[in-house]
Length: 286
Image (cartoon, rainbow, N blue to C red; front, side, top):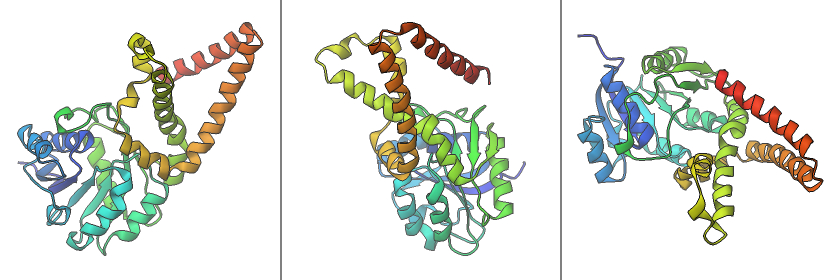
C-alpha cells in the first residue's frame, strides 16, 4: 500500500471547506488519520458519519498533537488566536496551512507564531459555495479549481513543495502569488462582489413586498449573499484598504451609468454595457 502524503491531519473548522478537504484527502489516500476540531458536536458527528474525519475534539491544542499537517479552515479573523493556542502542541516537521481568502499581513503574522521546525504555508483554494457545514462537504470540491499559494521569503522550500503536491493531488491547479498581490486582486474579484450582493439584498428588502418578486436573475445575482456574515466581516476588516480601493472604482463606474441614464443617453450606456458583456465573456472563455 502506498504511504499517505501525511500520516495524521488535523482540520480546525470542519465546515464546507474543512470537511471537503478532509473528505478529498482521505478518498485520495493523501491522509492517514484525520482529526476534526470544532465547536458544534452535531456538525462534528456529521463529519464522522460521512467519512470526512476519524475522530473529533473541541480542544484545538489536543487535536493537533502528533499531526504532520494542520489545516486552518476557521474564519480568518480567528486564525492568529488559534495559532497561539496550539503552538505548544505542534511538533517539529509539522506543516500548517489555511484556506482563507485574505493573506497579506496574515501570512507574516502566522509565520511569526510558528514554533521552531514548524512551517506555515498560506493557501487559498478558489472553491466553496453558499451553504455551510460538514453536511455540504464534497470530495470533488477542489477538482478543477485554482489554489493560490502565497509563500514568502521565509517559507520552507520543502514544506512549500509538499503543499503544492497536496493541492495538485486534490485536483487543483496551483498558482504562486505574493500575499499582498493576492489581497489586491481578490478585493476586486471576490470581496467586492460579496459586499455588493449583500448591499443589493439590503436595498431591495428595505421595500415591503419586493423580495417576493425576486426571480432567477435576482437569485443568481445575490446567491453569494447566502454566505455566513461572520466570515465576510473578518475578510472585509482584514482587507479593508484594498476593498475601499475596489469600492472607489466601482462607484466611479456606477456614477457614470447613472449620469448616462439621467441624461437619457441610452446609446452610450448600451456601448458601455457591451464592453462589460465582452469582458464577462472573456472570463468564461479564459
